[in-house]
Length: 342
Image 1 (spheres, rainbow, N blue to C red):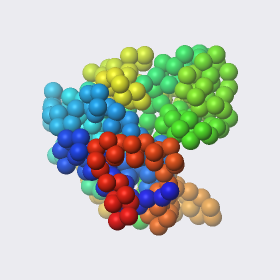
Image 2 (image 1 turned 90 degrees about the horizontal axis):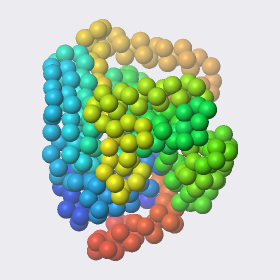
Image 3 (image 1 turned 60 degrees about the horizontal axis):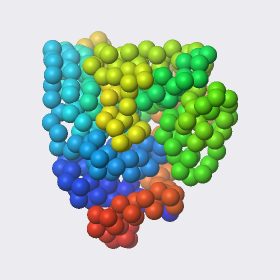
Image 4 (image 1 turned 45 degrees about the vertical axis):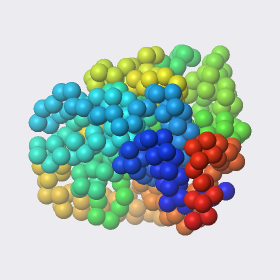
């Protein structure tokens, strides 16, 4: 079946507030989650929501927990999320980074004791909307084996970069692995195969079975290049921000254990370097050069198309996921039919 983004938000907010999540926090989680589905990142959209519900039930997500500043300078901050929703913690982190960038030109915020935060691009978008450059990186539970190995040690370690523009949405949001882990989880839930050259099974053999891949490892994108980038992100989003790294990272996919991953967030104010209007004009001029031939895309174009398509046609929910949401709703006495018929 298909639902609208507003229906998705309503479902999430109703369920979370029934579970004693403060309304403002539930709204952030709902907005980030629907943003993922609208952009086409269904692996990080409402399909992940049952994971968050499980985290709330077992206590690995602590709603209402204070997001505290442990260490701070005029342009940097280290945040302790105290195991609140990753969406809430990262939202505050980017707010702080933006405020510091307004004052000093650069705001750099590290985060630990957080949780899975949805799509990284949501937070780089926050910077774009303030005419700033936004960069977000994070490490995750081990899923990627180093080149030449078969044991997962690195995370899928995403990176998102957003750049302000007058005429275009300029954004990249990607895992440094050949596939995000969420896509494997989604394929397993739907009973689908995964593409070739994406993952290995536990014996190090190529596989198109998502279940076997989840027990094995995901390949880095671009062979040694993706591996090198994931390696560097592991260090920048791990020991630099007092978070775990390598095999000690837990909780990004398994909600039964506390999340130990880290995030590093950067906001840059272009006006501290050049005139912001001139910068954005030059960005658009460069894009015009890139698009001088037909059928050329820039990073962000597919998301723009997806938002238009899914806004007009609705967001698909498979039967297994719908059953999960129905079960959660019934358990909490949330009238799902009322939301879906509204």
